[in-house]
Image 1 (tube, rainbow, N blue to C red):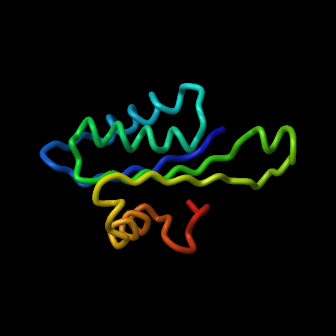
Image 2 (tube, helix red, strand yellow):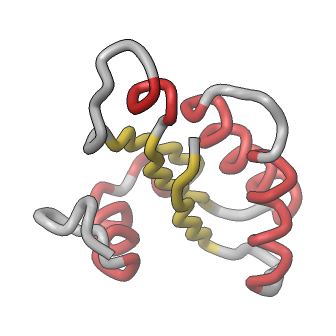
Image 3 (cartoon, rainbow, N blue to C red):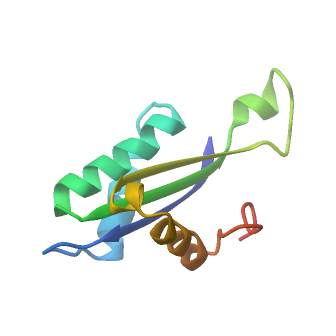
Amino acid sequence: FFGTAYVGYVAHDQTIGISKLTRLVRVLTQRFGVQERMTHQIAKSLEELLNAHGVAVYMEADHLCTQMRGVREDAATTRTTGYRGVYERDPSLRSEFFTLSGIGPGNQGRR
């Protein structure tokens, strides 16, 4: 599958650059795995690395297995979310994450 990952976090004492976020996502998604599990691995890893107050991860991907065999659906996009810390407890913070990412209500699937 191929797709896009959106990552946000509420820093505690440490922050990291965008290139490090990109590297973390690449390392965890280049292994064989399931999108849902990868979403949660990214959130957990970032939370542990930074001791962040909260982490939000949103992934959307097109899976070749649905396009090449089986249902042969070209437009099937799978979306998964993973929340840790304050993002789990605060719906307004999750809403802000989606809005800032450009994937708020009504914008899913649009880039």
